[in-house]
Length: 179
Image 1 (cartoon, one colour):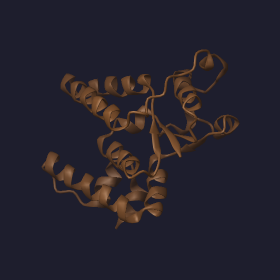
Image 2 (cartoon, rainbow, N blue to C red):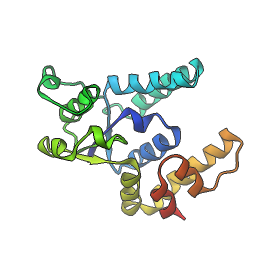
Image 3 (cartoon, rainbow, N blue to C red):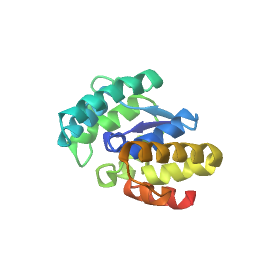
Image 4 (cartoon, rainbow, N blue to C red):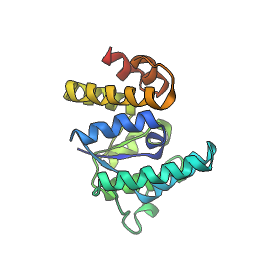
């Protein structure tokens, strides 16, 4: 299954690590566009300039880890598409160009199911998607979650419990399923 990942899913570190951990297990094929990656990098400016530099380094590593993930958007496609937020049309166009099965986003209102269905796409929320991946490969996804938790402990200096970390990362059902 090919899934286009929106910038709002790539930006939060824990969410990104869990979702891409599922991709590394081979549970799905991630897709994104250069514009989506640029949105992610620019969003980190809210933290500070160093965060943007770090994000751009992450992007280089992502593209190396998933060399087939970059989707060039077909010319003229965006002009025929419509979404409630015109700034998200490029995401839909990238999903279509990449022959994706769905779009993973947290912006449900900006990606109405009826419009996606007309294009042969499903909308996935990251929490629901991670729960599906956990059901598909419980051992692998538990390993992904454990690695993310260990990384959070190492980087944050805070002692996290799995459920609390996943809840903070807006993956509450996934966190609950892990307990």
